[in-house]
Image 1 (cartoon, rainbow, N blue to C red):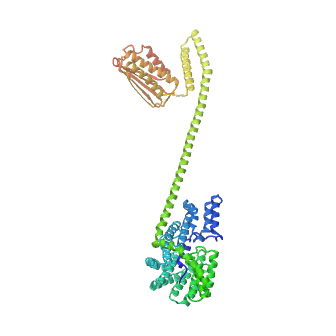
Image 2: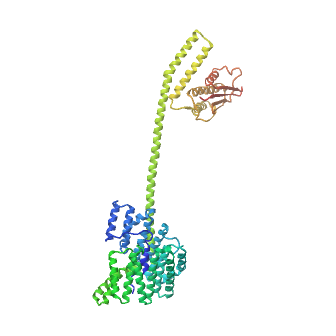
Length: 613
């Protein structure tokens, strides 16, 4: 009777952790150490990465601990909360697969092994395609659960891929990882074929394994897996010869496997659990062969290994008391043997419900649902954190925009105040200094005109008056905080025309363009008076019903076209009126042009053109 789990269950639990580095030896009390690490993490003594690495040094020792899933809750939260921590996400699935396998929750174990495989493919640690690690784990689970027909069924599907491995090894086109996976699958199938008494498939498996071993021996690229390959082939041979009751040959092959698994150069991450398992097989084999001294020696070695702690151990808890009971009974110590046997039944009874409830791998669906729910909760938590972060960001951005706008307005206000102060100072200087000088010059010209009148003095008097008018306009422009424009000029004319329409019924049309063009105060005041005079003439003398004003700002000049639909001006009186003379004089002051088009008795039009300052 075989008391330990099959080799595939052991080797695959170790293989789950391949590609993610080795782990440190665990402390004496791993559960207490995990609790201490959690306190240090929550007290911010350990960073996320430091906490994950520290847990990795302990978790492989707790594959049989019922509290492992709860103790890995924070580990999971950290690993799944950061896409950069993909290796630890894969390790979490590895721990859960090992735990589920040890607790005989085989459906859950297969599910977690598949998730572990997915993550390691994403990380580039496992090849995409080829022999699947999920198939390997499923085969080992079925074998451990004595579901040998399902093992054979899987093997039949994988056989074509397995047959291609030796040729691929010879060509160097397959990875060492795929070679290891192939050997593990063959070992599991050989074990199941023996148990199912399927000699044909057992022989087929051993033949394929021998071809792989020969190919590995000839190809230098696979030197790292040579010792591992010899171990698998020797162990498969041992299982086969043992099943055939060829004890001497089986014993030689077993000793070869023991030498290989304990040799330097065997993969360190696999060596502890492989060694433990091989010794448990030696206990069973030598007891069945009747060599109880050898069986007792190997049992003591297994017990010592178990006491010191073996990473990824899948040792059946009932193995030690059952083996000890058998050895005690063989020497006539039946009381002690019965006491050990009671321990076995207590352990088996406590595990009965777990094994029964997982019949047909129902726990696969449960594990998938639990993992999906955890993923949804984590995603929802991340979404809420992202929403809060976005809210904080937009709030901060809004405050920055409002603050920047307020700062710009304040800065602009201060700059405008400085400009206004400068303008006021200039206006004051014009008024207080240049104004008196011009007044004095005008008084001298006037006095000189009274005593010695000449045409030159008359012209000088006119020019002095224009200069004084210009200085007053400049002073006004500098004092004003608002610049006069074509648009403001048009609005003032429109206000007057609106009043006239309400009181007299005379309608109007007013159009203007380029309203932002600036007018000096001097221009603005003269133009306003000139248009007001023309509107007054239309209301008093023309008898019109429609007034039209067109204001066109060009690149260098402003053109105003004024007309009404009244009688126009009688011939001979065009230039006699005071108002018309005032308009002409103001046009001259502005250095512009004046053009009158009289269509008596059907109205008239005036076109004024003045240059911009």
